Length: 70
Image (cartoon, rainbow, N blue to C red):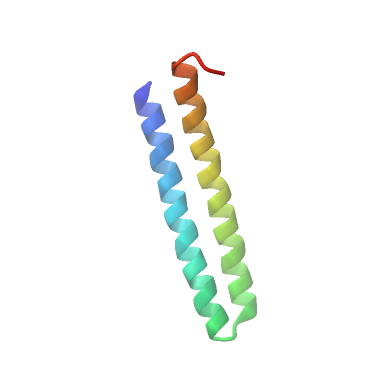
């Protein structure tokens, strides 16, 4: 049970890392005046962030469920 929770937290962290990498790339592209590329990276960052949040939510749900909270 706790293993699943751990995995979700791990996935969430992984996606957060990806998101911040995309954010950095977006910022870099922006500085280079490459707006199109910046927009692409920003979109990827947003997707990664959403995945991270989904995983964090899953982890929280599993954790709460284990303690009998709804």
